[in-house]
Length: 225
Image (cartoon, rainbow, N blue to C red; front, side, top):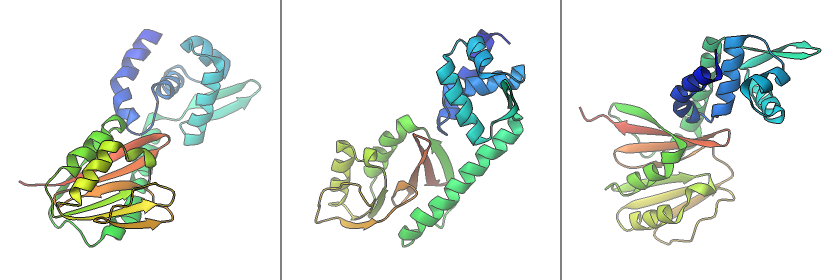
């Protein structure tokens, strides 16, 4: 397969993959091995026109994820794991993250639960702050907010949290080390660590976790039909 065709294939799935913290370059190297068979880091670098240092780093990450395996040592050859096995691995990671979120985020906020059917929507990293702002302006009697990543506390998000404290009961749970201003109208609690962050209102739940260096959002909204 030519590099052009490979690039076209990667472009079709890179937006989806980025949700899970998988870079375009990682997809490109994995796809190259999957379609072309075993290869050395040097040969992969030359065929993909990528620097050897970058390719070697990507191969190490892919091997750590279980996407590729070493099949020889002199020279070191890499081979892609079948794509169905990789997808099962990804689904397992997602399921584990959601299960941990249920334990670390839902249970501390168990006073507020949904009894109606709901739908889960995945939100990519670039849209998470916008999603937070959208649900913080939602009219609700209660706002339960968990913050374990300092980068989520942008000035607009903080202002909306302050505004919510004048509209309804507002509780904030913080991971130790996260800085948050002292606001008397907000019930605040700090715990040693949390697996993720999120917002719960009367009609929706936004859960946020990190996959690698990327944030992933899971919106759990009540079905109205």
